[in-house]
Length: 326
Image (tube, rainbow, N blue to C red):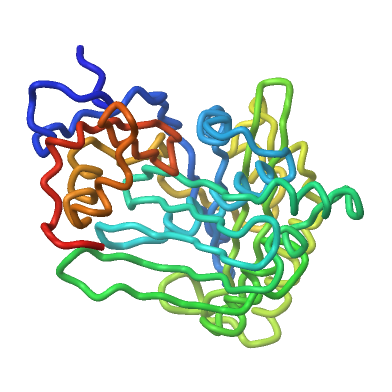
């Protein structure tokens, strides 16, 4: 089978084949749940081997990889709430060593992401601060959450200033200030004996009525919410990242006395959606002078997919361009 990253006799716009990337599906990647008769619902995300497949596409420092893994798990968890065909994305841009952090996930669970880091700035930071929390890595900037409902619908985007030491705290700040939603986010990512693993646990406080159980007064709702938070506080990163501990068992440990009810799990998969035709379309929008500048000595133009880190080569003479200078 021909390599779709290389030129061939087939016109570029017809080449939609999946590039040579891992074919990984985690059938129970997202496990939604709620607590019966209580104003608490949530989603447990565990990427399993998918985390390693996504994170090892780039040779980043472990601190950057850890942040990217948290972003992937978080985005998968937020996408798990989508009620439409589309995608959910997280983007963080700042003036720190990690200038760009991006992850997105479709309603079907196709997940991808990457982090762009300045190695010189990162080395300088870690010499002073070996931990390298998210606030230090990202610096001052913004965090954007975008729900894309397809070409026929308007995109919804919420943007908030980066605030908090961790990505979980930043997300909590977003929910509090932009969505007026009480939510709690727990994230974990680390390299284990089985490779990189990443997980997210997201809970939300919903109304104490509306079909989830008998109406509760404000005091009872608040007590149920505080109890859920206290129980999550007992959770360890090791538990979140343990492949041998099934998600349902983990939730049972936390909430079996609180009326745990588990909903239908949702799959996650390796979701880079790059293709030769897509990148050829991008190139066709450049002017002729820009394309000439991109071309190497052998007359080829190389475009690298930021997500899967694959190089696609195009013959300069076969790219028509927009006909105008850039």
